[in-house]
Amino acid sequence: MSDVAAEAARRRTFAIISHPDAGKTTLTEKFLLYGGALTKEAGAVKARGDRRSATSDWMALEQQRGISITSAAMQFPYRGQVVNLIDTPGHRDFSEDTYRVLAAADAAVMVLDAAKGIEPQTLKLFEVCRERELPLLTFINKWDRPGLEALDVLDEIETTLGIATAPVTFPVGIAGDFRGLLDRRDGQYTRYTRTARGATMAPEEVIDPERAAAEEGDVYGAAQEEFELLQGAGGDFDTKSFLAAESTPVFFGSALTNFGVGKLLDAVVDMVPPPTPRPDVDGHPRPVTAPFSGFVFKVQANMDKAHRDRIAFIRVCSGRFERGMVVTHQRTGKPFATKYAHQVFGQERETLDEAFPGDVVGLVNATDVRVGDTLWIDEPVEFPGIPSFAPEQFRVARVTDTSKFKQFRKGITQLDEEGVVQVLRDADLGDQAPVLAAVGPMQFEVAQWRLENEFGAPVELTGTSYTLARRTDAESALKLRGMRGVRVLARADGTLLALFESPYWVERLEADDPSLVLDRLVAEGRQG
Image (cartoon, rainbow, N blue to C red; front, side, top):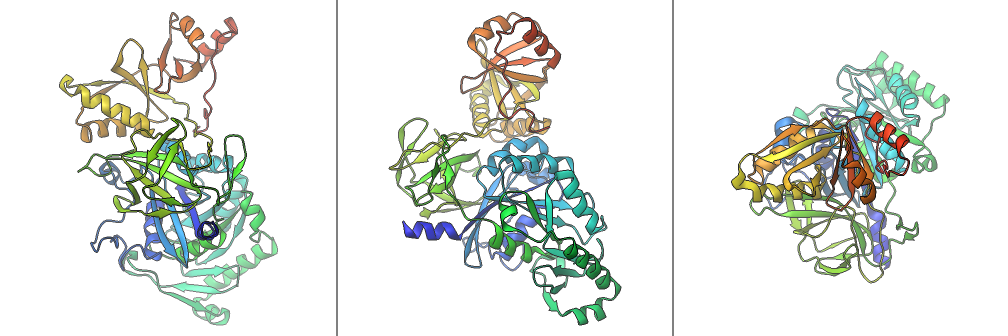
């Protein structure tokens, strides 16, 4: 298995997180440009000899709204390494999907808007990274536009997030007048030249300090002073504290103009750790050289409208994956064939013959596979599942055309399996009027859009007065069903949830009858 160890050591698997509009999708495209996954102009994919859109936001609704809703996995080579980039949804309502994606990553790049600094969604996603102890790199984006002072942004990161900053690059020129970058590692100054619409890699020119001072004038002198201030205050990059998620190396730049993108991508290769042994449910690490194992972190349907397919995204944790191998589906104990294994690049896909730890494999039409499932060969293993977030909003869904009920039932089942929404059913009503549960309202918008456009089942969603859910058991459910302001419904996995209109009502019931089982959901409160 020495080749497995060598291949694993070449992998860098990371996710990108940010507040909406911070530039995450633009940075994703520019990484692909610098990694050679795009042709000379950003926006054209070098796949099958054609020119195609490279955006990771492949869903029509994403393109209409200009935000990331789904997650996407892309792989490209860079400096002899294999980079697995996992894009994430950019809206807070989809923080549960982001949480699932981060379970498959070995590190994350946090993108901040130079003018806005830490925003609410940034903080929420950072807390998820912290809980998973993911090493974090920070990219201060949009330095080509007016914004905060560089030192102020660094201070805000430290005070708001409670993590030490280690600036690796530092801007010459204030936000809005971006000239180039000082590199703290070697003290060199790199000057950038704009390209038309950032369509090609920005020309870089390394200039010695004397020439830089003469040509850039006061802006270089001001940057040099602040740069020396930072050096005097310490905060040098420390691998140990970075890997422990106690400090974050910081990079400045502009994804739109490609300034600083190359240096950030270099840092991903140099700093992000390769795959390491992943603990199983009992906490025992499974070596990367053990026989193949992987876990499902994402399920997505209808990426190919022509075939109405369903893809399960697998993070390879150990061993060599070979297309066609028969693995064991841990949850069911049944054999599972992997004939239709693809590498997915946005909406593009290519047959994948082999993969190694850190890689992402798309298994097409894996109908029995669910998020959190483990697949293995030879040596049994089960990796920890991925908890669901506690829903905060609830809507009753009804199909408006009864002749489309079959499509409606299929659609809500699929959306439930993907985690777009949680589908809660009444034992007496079944799929007639299920309750859709979500973290935020945009999940309902996506569910309604997809039911109509992908499954041909137009629906109406009716609001409810419920505001929170608690896990309960069958005995407590019998008591709760007779109470006002409470409704007991079941998830597809059999879990019973009691929905309440007010937390005060929950507290009163618990006080009146301590025997009631009203457990908080595992991930409750994480989304804010």
